[in-house]
Length: 291
Ligand code: AMP
Image 1 (cartoon, rainbow, N blue to C red):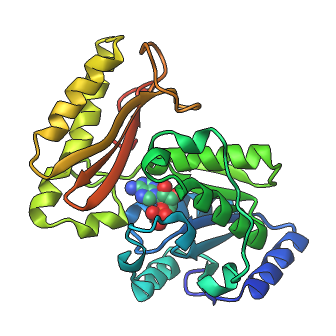
Image 2 (spheres, rainbow, N blue to C red; image 1 turned 90 degrees about the horizontal axis):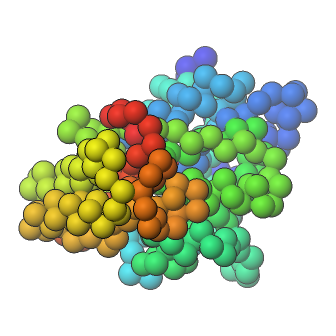
């Protein structure tokens, strides 16, 4: 029923709630977020709502996944707006832990994936996926979810979490959900709020570059360099755009492809001014805007 959302800030209380759900044999769907919620987040919430007895959403800006010169201190926040959106979406629990509750001063344990976290975003953000895997495992241990929902927009993150759950026998099903886009194709992201109106127009170069890759794939172009050159040239046509990486990789291993045949992921991180945006598209499926 809409209007019966509880907000829990204590780890102990959240664990008690989760244990009670399990004792009642109820399935819990979980959506971890860093807040400043948009329709991309809400699509995960709605999917969780439709597939579980109860839904928990966490809002926590996790310090361990930010590098020293990244945007932790200025990351956008809107606690009241988030709470209103989640209440309207009919979730059961909004979990908003304090950083001090999750990381004690003597915290020293981290989850690290040896291979997957070194590719793509891991090159310029070497500790990022260690922070992501650690916080997600901690949240899973607190929320004890049956199912957890993640966006394909953060494709590498989704693969990292799937592999962590497989490798550590975590008793939660990880479900990947499609990327939700603005009308012009830009992937929704809390970080889009950093863009000036002019940069917002330039940011469409990410989606355009992915569509170029899709067209080359449809034309059965086998040479990865043909894709990379065309994508890069579209991105560089915008004055404030600078690629961090543009790659064509295997969708599971995330290793660079030497030939493009039936299964590829076009994936990129691009700075528009100071704002780093990521996007990707699977080239194995029929065209769809919601990828
Ligand atoms: P964040 O708050 O950025 O950590 O994102 C929380 C969850 O929402 C992650 O699983 C993201 O992949 C997902 N997400 C973020 N943006 C989108 C989007 N545009 N479409 C679908 N899921 C998204």
